[in-house]
Image (cartoon, rainbow, N blue to C red):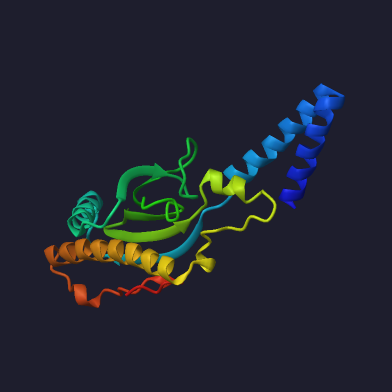
Length: 209
């Protein structure tokens, strides 16, 4: 439906540019506005997640994030970028409402996996620490614009990845998962808790364990 609206507005925009310029500019502006709303309004899709609650670990979140980053760097995984950023409930930057700090891991090999980001978080919950990561998918703005063109399909949709892309995506996510677990295990041992009781399997279409 969005495609049809954009085609309609752009078609009449180009047509009226030659017949009546103000109307043409108005139609073109409306078409660009629809494209902007489509690109910016697309929700982040959570594909995979892992969560746990560490007892009596309040205030240990920053330490856990630092240990996770150190483990990721030590793996020498190619072209990974890590940034710490405060985001809102939609896992995007916001200037309004509540935010929480996440460690965001981005795979920057080529263009195909930049739409997949891993958000790692450790948040106090009473005397405990709630730890989690989320694998998200959201096309870049240019990919979203391309999707409005005739005949263009979502090239890197997780449901349409070929075997090699699935392998690379799984390796990227598994690597971060194991690094986070290693940091969690270290914290559990420091707290004299048993890391073997931790449920290590993620929930989603990858099912990492």
